[in-house]
Amino acid sequence: MKRSSKGLILIIGLILTLIFNSCATLPTSVTYELKHAPFPHPWRENGHTYDGVHYSYEEHYSDSSVLVIIPEAYKKNTALDMIVFFHGWGNSKDKCNKQFELGKQLEDSGKDMLLVIPEGPKFSRDSYNGKVCDEGGFKRLIDELLDSLKRDGIIKEKRIGRILLSGHSGGYYAMGHILRWGGYTEKISDVVIFDGLYALEEDYLNWVMDHNGRLINIYTENGGTKDDTEMFMTWCDSLNIKYYAGETAGLDEMPDDRILMLYSDLGHSDVMHKRENLLKILRSMK
Image (cartoon, rainbow, N blue to C red; front, top):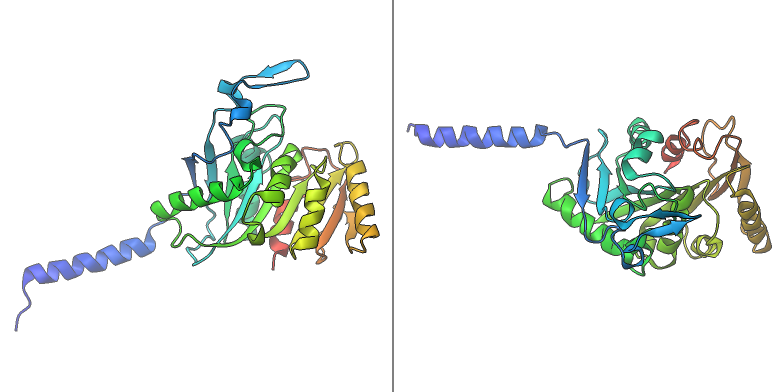
């Protein structure tokens, strides 16, 4: 019995479709405009003034974009692992990604994770990160992001594996509020502060005591974080919380300790990329 040419064409078409879908490559990055991104926020609808300089709403607090970096090693697993990074003063999501080589360090690590960088106070001297500082704000942001990633075929399911929460300098403020009441706290496996422990120490300490995740704090001599880090270590001593205190210089890989307090002799804006500390941290993740 002969098979019809139409049936044969249909079968070939299905096979080619399957081959194409299996070989289709994902974009290396995608940017979303999200309703639950840090900004806009009512507390900055009139901008912000610091040290006599005014940072307008239009230029600094109206951007609702979120950058997602997709490394070559990323696979559409059932659960999504991600790094969520918050930039500091005078920076932006795109600038910090290039300046600190965030995407490159993720790529070099070979980790199957996405890198998520929300736009914060854009090129402003301000640590306030709008809606992610609100109660439940982080969960709302991540849920909306998952909807967008699922819609675009970047993830299979809207299910989180683990989250590495990180930030540089003023990014600490968003991180502290996320640990306090942002949501998805149980999914945060690692908290990494790059020269940014200026305040909210109790939020970080409470997270350490209530969860089993890893805390890594890298601080410098002149970044304004040394005194607060030393105070944090004193608190840990008084509570019999063990930690590793050392230096990043000469450190080829991150120690296995759950809490790392690492001094860096580098400058405030060099602690992330000059010694590829993020890369070392990613490689040390179990």
